[in-house]
Amino acid sequence: MAVTGSAFSLVGGAPPEPERAPAPAVVPVAQAELDEPDELDAAGATGASLLAAAVEPVDPDPDVADASELVKAVQLAEQEIARVAAEKAAAEERAAQERAAAEAEAAKGPVDCGLDLSDLGRVKSNVRNAAEQLGCRYGEPDMHGVAGRAGTSDHPSGLAVDFMVDRATGDALASCALENMDTLGVKYVIWEQQINHGNGWKGMEDRGGATANHFDHVHISFERGGGGGSLQGC
Image (cartoon, rainbow, N blue to C red; front, side, top):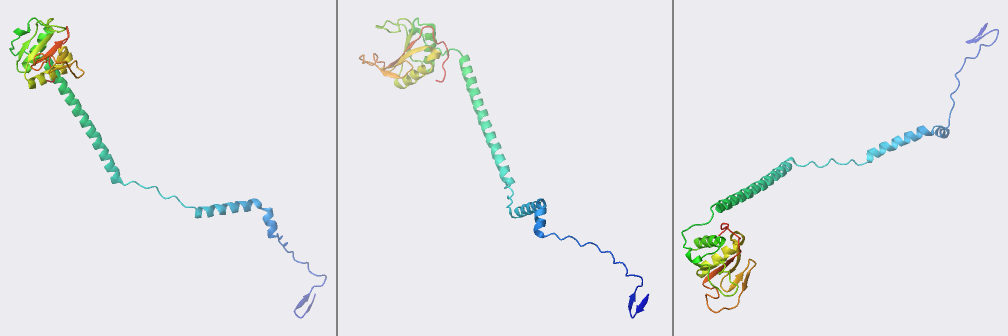
């Protein structure tokens, strides 16, 4: 081997070339985009989703009711329930008291005030019972029962009574008799030239004087075998 200056020469042939790594293949960008479409699509979709989430408005939280308002509403509802229950209980109590009073009144039976019934004659038992109750209730007036009458009067058959009264007493007695038609077995009432079968007063013909036109007495005719109960509400 010969050396000249700083250069070396190898005798017997040149040394072998050192091995070099192969250069990496260069793939054009356009080709890369074409070769991997799935990856690009996935990346694009992910990016779009993130962008949409970033700009999409978020619904605000629902309004939360004020607790004090809820408590107030519950209290008002409870008060209303209590009021309705109290009114119902009071109504039931009044109804029970009215039933008890009616039963007590009915249990008393016919009124006996020592009224003179001799002028009634042989009237029917239900007629006598009604006359006694009405007479005792309205000032013990003179009463006339069985008597001879013309036409279709109920007096001869013992199914009618005349109560000799003034105007104020007559108004009250006639009203009470009509109110107790079923209880006393009343058929109809005549007072001051009017007749009432339970469906309202109707005028009658002029028969002449005050007695004939029933201005001085209330006439009550009774059903045969009806009534027999005690006065109610008078």
